[in-house]
Length: 491
Image (cartoon, rainbow, N blue to C red):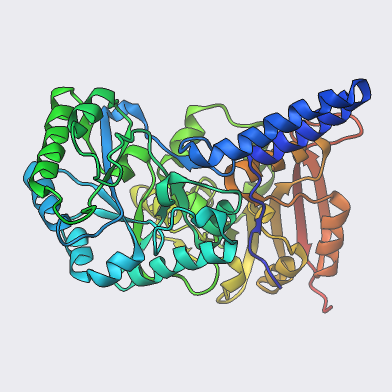
């Protein structure tokens, strides 16, 4: 059975479209001609959005970075090209600048030595489709998958897997987000396009770029020759002037990953089977997860979850216990558990989140945490655990019954299962919508009755279920807490 996250690439376009049709229905009751106004506005937005590189109407788009670093990022599209890329790399090396190259699969296949040189000199590589077809977004989702996956497979031969995808000419469409979720990627466009037309218009390129540049910009340039007679020396002079001009303007140049706070590529091959979009999302935010969580007040659900952990779960754990935590994240709950019990096995599909957990454990002098970078569906426990716990991670599992059966098999008789998860309610529905807009995933919420049935059917008794956070009469809370004991009799 499928136990991976449920894709739900909900975008502002869906909400605007729903609102437009609702408004049209209301206006039609007044005057049928007025109904055309909201529908026309929606149509104009749909037609314009693909050509606005920073307008995330159909999917989240990274188009600029944070300005607090006082720097911009240089990105070069459409290469590699033997007449330009090698000399550009020499110039970047001379200036000590690291750039990102969004390369096409067809060119990379023909100039593998240049791909190796780009990587060997410390630059990053993004996916720019196979053929760079400007009309690609008008074609089928299958063709889009082929263009992206083909380039991913080729680049895997060089030991890298790009996470950043830039569509040809920065044009997007409603199908792109689902394809990127399936491949574990995200969309990167640009905030500054000086209009070089693929290096067909390089006159005054540096002047236009430096004049418009601001800290946090993602600058779009090209490293291809547009045809015979291209003046490479002139072009390189413009690139040199851009680098020098940004320095004079007190704007540094940093790698794209530093500007946007996300990895552009990772080492390794293309995963077998579909990517885990939840793991990819948390890989992207792992570096800032704890900082952002601590910088703002906890949400009602997160605050309630922390209080429940301290009050209701931690006292259940003894020094001789072996504990299995599913979806450990950065170790918010793993670390205090490890200080209390003999051993914690922490399962976490996001490698970057798990790296943060390991770092915390090392700083705390904890050696009793076993970290497993794997989805629970592919994990085979060694021995039995005294307790299995999960904190707001079961929402990503569509088949809870199948998972709980697996959990039950890993708990010794008399052991406990404890978890918090999303409770089905009126208010929770809106957080599910918000998550689909942010992650492209649908977080599953459950009722008390559903969870009780699953637990009792999997060999648990002494079941206690309660709701918390944002509780109101008749509706209950948005967080569900469940605790049960594995029965000692055979089932």
